[in-house]
Length: 289
Ligand SMILES: [Fe+2]
Ligand SMILES: [Fe+2]
Image (cartoon, rainbow, N blue to C red; front, side):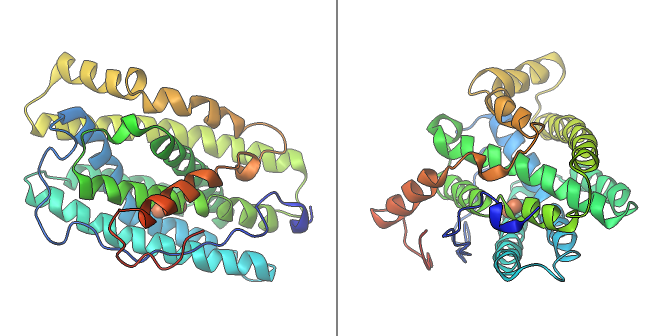
């Protein structure tokens, strides 16, 4: 397959926005509107980012040799963005620890999953990265498209999540394009089989681990048992229902000929940029899309 035919918009520029969040004041323990379950699921997600995104970078970089110049340029933008995300989520996780959470169980679970994947061939790591990048892109889309998800959240922390979401959308095609390049001699069937198997595996782990991680953090807030399950499942699947709302976009991944840019959500990037121009803090936003 020729890379020229890929649907990643030709004029898309992947622009790292080197911003820092939450350095001036402590983050409230229940930063998400005082809600235990909302704070828990975002904190559980954040715990995966420093190690997880370093793994994404390593997986994509393993295939950058021989990449066409446009893709090589996109890989550069992607790795810089992910490195800055890791730094900011590491800082965020430290603030969660300062607020009293013990994240060690969640971190150990991330390590365990990464160790299994690292024991497989590099192309499987790339497929896992591509699957998780699809997850982050559809979560990011939902987060930016529907203000309900961050309603009532601490302003600075909500800003961190929106900033991360924008860059996840911006670079959502990079791991996928790297994969198409790396497997260009494969049949479509062989490619589809591996990407499907890996996506199903990653999805199971993602849902089980994030749910388990959030329940662990809720336990640390004194919410346990049936009450914890009910609150968390309601939040994730009913209202605002992030997991339910991304289900359709998740299914698209399995369609023959799928590409992340089949859904063009650059309007969300433009809305973020104009919001940044019109009143959000303007610190270090180097360039808008
Ligand atoms: Fe990221
Ligand atoms: Fe990413």
